[in-house]
Length: 212
Image (cartoon, rainbow, N blue to C red; front, side, top):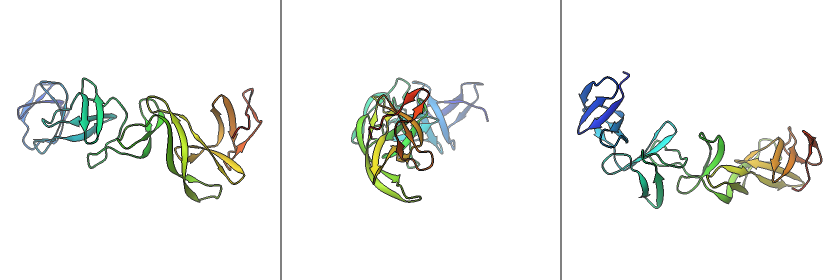
């Protein structure tokens, strides 16, 4: 209907046209009039103590139904929110209102791969992650623990080399990579059909070195 509502004491007011109505029967997102932070209303009732996702933004609704700010202990973990109630790190909310964990995703703000850990936030530093990966047999996968490197924001900066038999493969998010990849100052060419590493091939004037 084009209305953008703010909420105050059981009433909704459109911030665009000034239209006003009671909250009874309403379902949707609004902003709290006093704080300008999000609330989520289901059938006229404020949701509380729950994660919500609005586009790429993540909020946690406190006991009063308003998105929390600052440092907050939620369950076993501590989370940081900005002044508008937005989680300061990438995350993803499931249908049951909890954060997704132990899953690869693309951070839409950086377009980089991240891995969500036990707390639902991107892991950082050097991490051993068990992935179900492609093997050197077509259509066959296996569970393998691979070592990945992430920056301080959780963006993946280095995939994982893994040897199967006499061949070495390069994985990102458990997916066998192909073509040219620049890793630790060296170019590596992974065969475009099989994915296994090939050494001493030139690309744009650079030479790959067989270090894997």
